Length: 237
Ligand SMILES: [Mn+2]
Image (cartoon, rainbow, N blue to C red):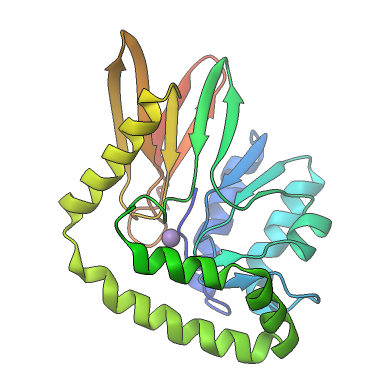
């Protein structure tokens, strides 16, 4: 799952995710978070997100029951170490990564780098996710950093409207096709906030692209079950 964009102290959106995790927790082996689970998270030296307590308590309970968490950083949650690594024992990926499941090679990424023409964003991302910036953020602390983050969040929200949904879906599909042609069996992305499930035949081989969608409008997720493969689903709450 991805793109819940949970906000601190926002009980309603957190409660929905909590109900989902409660329902699935019993049979869940690994929870894969594909970024932007939080509207903002940064790995400060000390715990700085009391407002996420309800959902974090749920994650801690799952981990205690033996569920593993695998977290790919998004463009709103990064520098993840500290709490996620130490308390939740999460496996953290900063960028794209590869998962092997049931004999398939799976490419996973948040998806904020899908548009290779968006040079401005790429430059911004490089600066934002650099050692000097991380040093400054840790140095000025959570209070100021959160204020700056919420300002930047509002700016990026205004920018989002420029591209039509079709154009965004096309971009993501194209990107997925390129990875599939490179030899991956499955490509899983997020970030577009639109659930997608496509199958292709590449060199006579079945290949799949999934976008896990979001938890703002769709409450969608991708389930993998051994023997049954992948299936996009929506949480009915
Ligand atoms: Mn995103």
